[in-house]
Image (cartoon, rainbow, N blue to C red; front, side, top):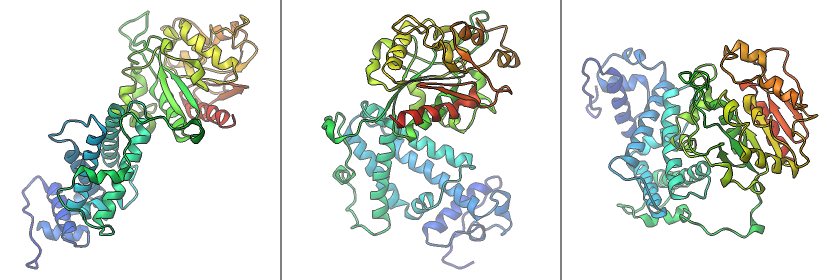
Length: 430
């Protein structure tokens, strides 16, 4: 071993940690990254790393996870969460400091595409973004926390990258918060821009339940079917739509336990549940009395068996739905969400669904899901009694979405993406 290569002490039982530490030291020393080099620096055989890392890319990904967690620690350990715009600026300064202290690791963390099959790396990245979203929600309550967290991270990252790659005049340490003037961070309460200068984005009202158990058996839990919310939220967010979550009573929306198990617990639902800022949105939903229907272009009812108990009797939701529908806005519902339409009437007294094509969770699917003895009524039958032209897919639990004018419905959880996509397409044309 050459004299300029320091050996990292290895103790039985922590080979993986030793190899990561060795690889990190070599990386920061300017050495090419490889499993062989990490083994040499750790003082173990060249075959030893393959017990923990399949290849060089796996080692890089593990180092990126280490870096993301170290960065998260730098931003949060011993610090109170930012409560003002200037304190958000200080957070950005810490980000730049990390890049200057760990330049090689910083470049590795963000110099390659994140492998979405690496759950550990995805979780580490989402935890960091989730923390930033939670900060933005607290400091800038009038803004979209997801968009602002992404924008703030991007701006801080750009400045950090310029400094760390020597393409920007090196700052004098310690950095001051004045350095963050370059980040163009907004004030906590930015003045509204002139209406003529900002194109109006579409606004969607997402409806969730407040119920957490079946009435006939309180020991049997139910709630919001998470993926039916998250797929809609993701699709609408991608198109720049503003969104707000409302529930019949306002406040907390519990999750349906079965929606948190495979195969229902998909990537979209998992990402939401692992995001503190997103989960916080379900802890304090708006009530119908707080909503002015004139502010929204669409209303979208999510599902879960729980909605069968509190959607139909909500006069507030019926009012909002009627007003949006009658002025040409979009009404959407997925799975059991169409329970929110069963008693909604128009200004002339007729049922909104009368004479219209739609779909929703079928009675056959209730039986196959083994909840037909728990649900309070047969919604497929009830909606047809209101004059709806109900249809369902030939096979149960397959995707099926139906559009009739400005009414869009989906049959089951598998239909969540298709239903939201059709709603988004109608909104984009308006």
